[in-house]
Figure 1 (cartoon, rainbow, N blue to C red):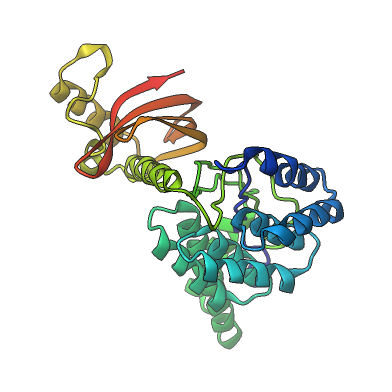
Figure 2: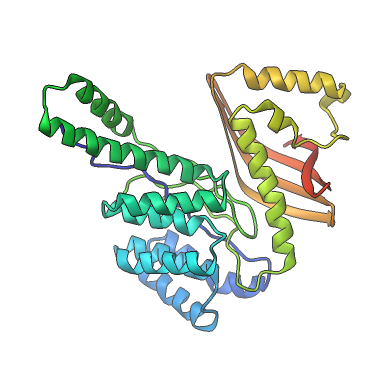
Length: 330
Protein backbone atom coordinates (compact mmCIF):
# COMPACT_ATOMS: atom_id res chain seq x y z
CA UNK A 1 0.00 0.00 0.00
CA UNK A 2 1.12 3.53 -0.67
CA UNK A 3 0.59 6.20 1.92
CA UNK A 4 -1.23 9.41 1.02
CA UNK A 5 0.84 11.63 -1.22
CA UNK A 6 -1.46 14.64 -1.07
CA UNK A 7 -2.87 16.38 1.95
CA UNK A 8 -5.50 18.97 1.02
CA UNK A 9 -4.87 21.85 3.39
CA UNK A 10 -6.33 25.32 2.93
CA UNK A 11 -4.21 28.41 2.37
CA UNK A 12 -6.08 31.37 3.77
CA UNK A 13 -5.74 34.51 1.69
CA UNK A 14 -5.92 37.84 3.54
CA UNK A 15 -6.55 40.85 1.33
CA UNK A 16 -8.33 44.15 1.41
CA UNK A 17 -8.22 47.83 2.16
CA UNK A 18 -7.80 48.85 5.78
CA UNK A 19 -10.31 51.09 7.48
CA UNK A 20 -7.62 53.77 7.89
CA UNK A 21 -5.54 55.51 5.22
CA UNK A 22 -7.65 54.03 2.37
CA UNK A 23 -5.90 56.03 -0.38
CA UNK A 24 -2.48 54.79 0.70
CA UNK A 25 -3.67 51.20 0.90
CA UNK A 26 -5.36 51.40 -2.49
CA UNK A 27 -2.23 52.87 -4.10
CA UNK A 28 0.19 50.32 -2.71
CA UNK A 29 -1.19 47.13 -1.21
CA UNK A 30 -4.15 46.84 -3.54
CA UNK A 31 -1.83 47.23 -6.51
CA UNK A 32 0.44 44.56 -5.03
CA UNK A 33 -2.57 42.30 -4.54
CA UNK A 34 -3.62 42.70 -8.17
CA UNK A 35 -0.09 41.90 -9.35
CA UNK A 36 -0.09 38.83 -7.11
CA UNK A 37 -3.39 37.63 -8.57
CA UNK A 38 -2.00 38.12 -12.07
CA UNK A 39 0.98 35.94 -11.24
CA UNK A 40 3.46 38.84 -11.38
CA UNK A 41 5.07 37.84 -8.12
CA UNK A 42 8.37 39.69 -8.45
CA UNK A 43 6.61 42.97 -9.20
CA UNK A 44 4.15 42.38 -6.36
CA UNK A 45 7.00 41.67 -3.96
CA UNK A 46 8.78 44.87 -4.96
CA UNK A 47 5.66 46.91 -4.16
CA UNK A 48 5.09 45.12 -0.87
CA UNK A 49 8.71 45.58 0.17
CA UNK A 50 8.50 49.26 -0.70
CA UNK A 51 5.36 49.61 1.41
CA UNK A 52 6.88 47.70 4.34
CA UNK A 53 9.99 49.89 4.31
CA UNK A 54 7.75 52.65 5.65
CA UNK A 55 5.41 50.45 7.73
CA UNK A 56 7.48 47.40 8.75
CA UNK A 57 4.91 46.11 11.27
CA UNK A 58 1.89 46.28 8.96
CA UNK A 59 0.08 42.93 9.23
CA UNK A 60 -1.56 43.02 5.82
CA UNK A 61 1.62 43.82 3.93
CA UNK A 62 3.58 41.15 5.76
CA UNK A 63 0.86 38.57 5.16
CA UNK A 64 0.88 39.31 1.43
CA UNK A 65 4.67 39.11 1.47
CA UNK A 66 4.41 35.62 2.98
CA UNK A 67 1.97 34.54 0.28
CA UNK A 68 4.28 35.81 -2.45
CA UNK A 69 7.23 33.91 -0.97
CA UNK A 70 5.03 30.82 -0.89
CA UNK A 71 4.14 31.15 -4.57
CA UNK A 72 7.80 31.69 -5.43
CA UNK A 73 8.71 28.48 -3.64
CA UNK A 74 10.71 30.34 -1.01
CA UNK A 75 9.30 28.23 1.80
CA UNK A 76 11.88 29.15 4.50
CA UNK A 77 11.25 32.86 3.82
CA UNK A 78 7.47 32.32 3.94
CA UNK A 79 7.76 30.40 7.21
CA UNK A 80 9.85 33.23 8.67
CA UNK A 81 7.21 35.81 7.72
CA UNK A 82 4.23 33.89 9.08
CA UNK A 83 6.16 32.92 12.22
CA UNK A 84 6.94 36.58 12.92
CA UNK A 85 3.26 37.43 12.45
CA UNK A 86 2.27 34.87 15.09
CA UNK A 87 4.66 36.61 17.49
CA UNK A 88 3.50 40.16 16.76
CA UNK A 89 -0.19 39.30 16.28
CA UNK A 90 -0.80 36.17 18.40
CA UNK A 91 -4.54 36.83 18.33
CA UNK A 92 -4.78 36.14 14.56
CA UNK A 93 -5.38 32.50 13.54
CA UNK A 94 -4.60 32.91 9.81
CA UNK A 95 -0.78 33.03 10.08
CA UNK A 96 -0.86 29.85 12.21
CA UNK A 97 -3.00 28.15 9.55
CA UNK A 98 -0.62 29.07 6.74
CA UNK A 99 2.37 27.97 8.80
CA UNK A 100 0.67 24.59 9.13
CA UNK A 101 0.29 24.34 5.35
CA UNK A 102 3.96 25.13 4.86
CA UNK A 103 5.09 22.68 7.52
CA UNK A 104 2.86 19.98 6.00
CA UNK A 105 4.43 20.62 2.60
CA UNK A 106 7.74 19.63 4.19
CA UNK A 107 6.22 16.61 5.95
CA UNK A 108 6.68 18.29 9.34
CA UNK A 109 3.29 17.13 10.58
CA UNK A 110 3.97 17.59 14.29
CA UNK A 111 4.75 21.27 13.70
CA UNK A 112 1.71 21.58 11.43
CA UNK A 113 -0.45 20.05 14.15
CA UNK A 114 0.89 22.47 16.78
CA UNK A 115 0.30 25.47 14.53
CA UNK A 116 -3.30 24.47 13.84
CA UNK A 117 -3.93 23.91 17.54
CA UNK A 118 -2.72 27.46 18.16
CA UNK A 119 -5.03 28.77 15.43
CA UNK A 120 -7.97 27.05 17.09
CA UNK A 121 -6.93 28.29 20.52
CA UNK A 122 -6.98 31.89 19.29
CA UNK A 123 -10.30 31.42 17.49
CA UNK A 124 -12.25 28.26 18.45
CA UNK A 125 -14.84 28.69 15.67
CA UNK A 126 -12.21 28.90 12.90
CA UNK A 127 -13.59 26.06 10.77
CA UNK A 128 -10.70 25.98 8.29
CA UNK A 129 -8.19 25.18 11.04
CA UNK A 130 -10.44 22.45 12.44
CA UNK A 131 -10.75 20.81 9.03
CA UNK A 132 -7.04 21.12 8.35
CA UNK A 133 -6.25 19.59 11.73
CA UNK A 134 -8.45 16.65 10.79
CA UNK A 135 -6.46 16.29 7.58
CA UNK A 136 -3.21 16.30 9.56
CA UNK A 137 -4.52 13.61 11.89
CA UNK A 138 -5.59 11.56 8.86
CA UNK A 139 -2.17 11.93 7.28
CA UNK A 140 -0.42 10.92 10.48
CA UNK A 141 -2.79 7.95 10.81
CA UNK A 142 -2.05 6.85 7.25
CA UNK A 143 1.67 6.84 8.03
CA UNK A 144 1.08 4.74 11.12
CA UNK A 145 -1.10 2.27 9.19
CA UNK A 146 1.53 2.05 6.47
CA UNK A 147 4.22 1.25 9.02
CA UNK A 148 1.96 -1.39 10.53
CA UNK A 149 1.52 -3.01 7.12
CA UNK A 150 5.26 -3.03 6.58
CA UNK A 151 5.49 -5.16 9.73
CA UNK A 152 2.47 -7.30 8.90
CA UNK A 153 1.17 -7.04 5.35
CA UNK A 154 -1.53 -9.64 5.98
CA UNK A 155 -3.49 -7.40 8.36
CA UNK A 156 -6.68 -6.84 6.38
CA UNK A 157 -8.17 -4.47 8.96
CA UNK A 158 -5.23 -2.10 8.65
CA UNK A 159 -5.38 -2.39 4.86
CA UNK A 160 -9.04 -1.35 4.95
CA UNK A 161 -8.37 1.63 7.22
CA UNK A 162 -5.52 2.85 5.05
CA UNK A 163 -7.60 2.46 1.89
CA UNK A 164 -10.41 4.50 3.44
CA UNK A 165 -8.06 7.37 4.24
CA UNK A 166 -6.53 7.26 0.76
CA UNK A 167 -9.98 7.32 -0.77
CA UNK A 168 -10.89 10.30 1.40
CA UNK A 169 -8.20 12.43 -0.21
CA UNK A 170 -7.96 11.03 -3.73
CA UNK A 171 -11.58 10.37 -4.63
CA UNK A 172 -12.08 13.88 -6.00
CA UNK A 173 -10.47 17.34 -5.86
CA UNK A 174 -11.23 19.17 -2.65
CA UNK A 175 -11.62 22.93 -2.80
CA UNK A 176 -13.06 24.49 0.28
CA UNK A 177 -14.37 27.74 1.62
CA UNK A 178 -12.03 28.89 4.35
CA UNK A 179 -13.83 30.17 7.40
CA UNK A 180 -11.73 33.22 8.00
CA UNK A 181 -11.96 35.59 10.91
CA UNK A 182 -10.53 38.94 9.93
CA UNK A 183 -9.19 41.47 12.39
CA UNK A 184 -10.74 44.44 10.62
CA UNK A 185 -13.44 43.50 8.11
CA UNK A 186 -15.15 40.16 7.36
CA UNK A 187 -14.30 37.76 4.58
CA UNK A 188 -14.57 34.08 3.77
CA UNK A 189 -12.33 33.69 0.71
CA UNK A 190 -11.99 30.58 -1.38
CA UNK A 191 -9.10 28.47 -0.14
CA UNK A 192 -6.65 26.43 -2.15
CA UNK A 193 -6.12 22.70 -2.02
CA UNK A 194 -2.85 20.76 -2.41
CA UNK A 195 -0.13 20.64 0.18
CA UNK A 196 2.24 21.92 -2.51
CA UNK A 197 0.22 25.15 -2.35
CA UNK A 198 -0.01 25.52 -6.12
CA UNK A 199 -2.00 28.47 -7.42
CA UNK A 200 -4.45 29.29 -4.59
CA UNK A 201 -7.82 30.53 -5.81
CA UNK A 202 -8.09 34.14 -4.75
CA UNK A 203 -11.26 35.93 -3.79
CA UNK A 204 -10.56 39.59 -3.06
CA UNK A 205 -11.93 40.49 0.32
CA UNK A 206 -11.50 42.94 3.15
CA UNK A 207 -9.02 41.93 5.81
CA UNK A 208 -5.96 42.29 8.00
CA UNK A 209 -5.27 44.56 10.95
CA UNK A 210 -2.49 47.11 11.26
CA UNK A 211 -0.46 47.52 14.42
CA UNK A 212 -2.17 50.82 15.08
CA UNK A 213 -5.71 49.47 14.52
CA UNK A 214 -8.29 51.90 15.92
CA UNK A 215 -11.02 51.06 18.40
CA UNK A 216 -13.43 50.74 15.47
CA UNK A 217 -11.61 47.58 14.40
CA UNK A 218 -12.28 46.04 17.81
CA UNK A 219 -15.97 46.82 17.44
CA UNK A 220 -16.01 45.25 13.98
CA UNK A 221 -14.21 42.21 15.33
CA UNK A 222 -16.87 41.77 18.02
CA UNK A 223 -19.61 41.85 15.40
CA UNK A 224 -17.75 39.45 13.10
CA UNK A 225 -17.12 37.00 15.91
CA UNK A 226 -20.84 37.02 16.64
CA UNK A 227 -21.63 36.27 12.98
CA UNK A 228 -19.00 33.51 12.94
CA UNK A 229 -20.49 31.95 16.08
CA UNK A 230 -24.01 32.15 14.61
CA UNK A 231 -22.91 30.39 11.40
CA UNK A 232 -20.96 27.80 13.39
CA UNK A 233 -23.96 27.00 15.60
CA UNK A 234 -26.15 26.65 12.51
CA UNK A 235 -23.59 24.38 10.83
CA UNK A 236 -23.27 22.19 13.92
CA UNK A 237 -27.09 21.98 14.16
CA UNK A 238 -26.97 23.28 17.72
CA UNK A 239 -30.48 24.73 17.79
CA UNK A 240 -30.28 26.15 21.31
CA UNK A 241 -27.04 27.99 20.59
CA UNK A 242 -28.30 29.09 17.17
CA UNK A 243 -31.44 30.64 18.63
CA UNK A 244 -29.42 32.38 21.35
CA UNK A 245 -27.94 34.64 18.66
CA UNK A 246 -31.32 36.31 18.08
CA UNK A 247 -32.41 39.34 20.11
CA UNK A 248 -35.59 39.26 22.19
CA UNK A 249 -37.13 41.81 19.81
CA UNK A 250 -36.09 39.90 16.67
CA UNK A 251 -38.37 40.76 13.77
CA UNK A 252 -39.73 37.39 12.69
CA UNK A 253 -40.63 36.77 9.02
CA UNK A 254 -44.25 37.53 8.14
CA UNK A 255 -44.91 38.71 11.68
CA UNK A 256 -45.35 35.22 13.12
CA UNK A 257 -44.94 34.70 16.85
CA UNK A 258 -41.44 34.16 18.25
CA UNK A 259 -42.39 30.69 19.51
CA UNK A 260 -43.78 29.63 16.13
CA UNK A 261 -40.71 30.93 14.35
CA UNK A 262 -38.39 29.18 16.80
CA UNK A 263 -40.26 25.89 16.37
CA UNK A 264 -40.02 26.23 12.59
CA UNK A 265 -36.28 26.92 12.76
CA UNK A 266 -35.75 23.94 15.07
CA UNK A 267 -37.52 21.67 12.61
CA UNK A 268 -35.62 22.98 9.59
CA UNK A 269 -32.26 22.70 11.33
CA UNK A 270 -32.89 19.26 12.82
CA UNK A 271 -34.26 17.63 9.68
CA UNK A 272 -31.17 17.49 7.36
CA UNK A 273 -28.41 14.99 8.07
CA UNK A 274 -25.85 17.76 7.81
CA UNK A 275 -25.68 21.54 7.34
CA UNK A 276 -22.78 23.67 6.24
CA UNK A 277 -23.00 27.47 6.27
CA UNK A 278 -20.26 29.75 4.97
CA UNK A 279 -20.28 33.56 4.95
CA UNK A 280 -17.87 35.69 2.91
CA UNK A 281 -17.27 39.10 1.36
CA UNK A 282 -18.84 40.94 4.26
CA UNK A 283 -19.02 44.56 5.32
CA UNK A 284 -19.95 46.11 8.65
CA UNK A 285 -21.60 49.52 9.07
CA UNK A 286 -22.39 51.03 12.46
CA UNK A 287 -25.49 53.15 13.01
CA UNK A 288 -24.30 53.91 16.53
CA UNK A 289 -22.35 52.15 19.29
CA UNK A 290 -25.02 49.48 19.78
CA UNK A 291 -26.42 48.96 16.27
CA UNK A 292 -24.67 47.52 13.22
CA UNK A 293 -25.58 46.30 9.74
CA UNK A 294 -23.65 43.32 8.40
CA UNK A 295 -23.87 42.43 4.70
CA UNK A 296 -22.30 39.29 3.29
CA UNK A 297 -22.64 36.45 0.80
CA UNK A 298 -23.97 33.24 2.30
CA UNK A 299 -23.38 29.72 0.96
CA UNK A 300 -25.74 27.14 2.46
CA UNK A 301 -25.48 23.39 1.94
CA UNK A 302 -27.61 20.67 3.47
CA UNK A 303 -28.17 16.97 2.70
CA UNK A 304 -29.87 17.36 -0.69
CA UNK A 305 -30.13 21.12 -0.96
CA UNK A 306 -27.83 24.06 -1.49
CA UNK A 307 -28.37 27.77 -1.95
CA UNK A 308 -26.21 30.83 -2.33
CA UNK A 309 -27.07 34.50 -2.07
CA UNK A 310 -26.65 37.84 -0.33
CA UNK A 311 -27.86 38.42 3.19
CA UNK A 312 -28.08 41.35 5.57
CA UNK A 313 -28.21 41.10 9.37
CA UNK A 314 -29.33 44.04 11.50
CA UNK A 315 -27.60 43.56 14.83
CA UNK A 316 -27.90 45.10 18.27
CA UNK A 317 -25.51 44.98 21.21
CA UNK A 318 -27.31 43.66 24.26
CA UNK A 319 -25.67 42.61 27.52
CA UNK A 320 -22.25 42.81 25.90
CA UNK A 321 -23.27 40.49 23.03
CA UNK A 322 -24.12 41.30 19.42
CA UNK A 323 -27.52 39.77 18.59
CA UNK A 324 -29.61 39.60 15.42
CA UNK A 325 -32.64 41.90 15.29
CA UNK A 326 -33.59 41.26 11.68
CA UNK A 327 -32.54 39.11 8.71
CA UNK A 328 -32.91 40.24 5.13
CA UNK A 329 -32.23 38.19 2.01
CA UNK A 330 -31.35 40.15 -1.14
